[in-house]
Image 1 (tube, helix red, strand yellow):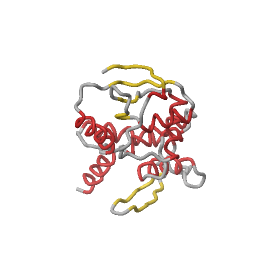
Image 2 (cartoon, one colour):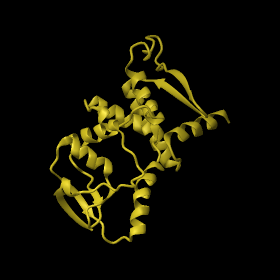
Image 3 (cartoon, one colour):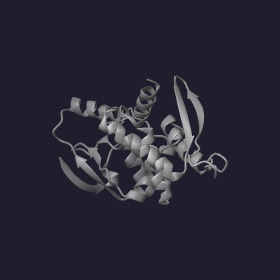
Amino acid sequence: MDFQQVDINSLIAYPENARTHDEKQIKQIAKSIKKFGFCAPCLVDDDGVLIAGHGRLMAAQTLGLETIPVVRINHLTPEQVKAYRIADNQLALNAHWDVGLLSLELGNLKDAGFDLDLLGFDNDLVGKAAHLFLEEVETQGNVTEPDSNNDMPVMEGSVGHDGEFVTLTFSFTKEDRDLVVEKLRVFSSKHNIGTVNQALIYLVKDIEK
């Protein structure tokens, strides 16, 4: 593999690339490049034909960049290159988000004044769940203050349905939110439980016994 900074006009988009990039996503990638820099080089063959990074190339073109970083891949057969183009996109889709931990991270970034639009979450189910968690905390009337005569923190919940899944949203103070998510994270790690959501279910079922 050979890492280089090359003239953007020397690169050639693969004409049969099956992965599509709409204008909205290209703008998101461009905003990311402006904020973070070109952190992920495009992958190309010896002729400059793209193997991976079509979206990044199009975003760089909209930004008017003259050169971008690439890694030249020359150890794969033509068939392996074709397969890798598909695998590079599909394997990333097979990962999942832990919504509880994601909400905690988003909350910390928002508290630090970071523009969450740069992260690329739109109307997908995970993004909705994570953002809803934050909005419930911040919206006046949805956050219930503890009664002065009661030392126990008050918690409100709302339920949303999406097909076979049910989303539960609870409102906490920021301190309580961070504490709840962190305790669930530690519990799930200690007991080798996959996600904080599963940890919560485990605890509830244990209480019922």
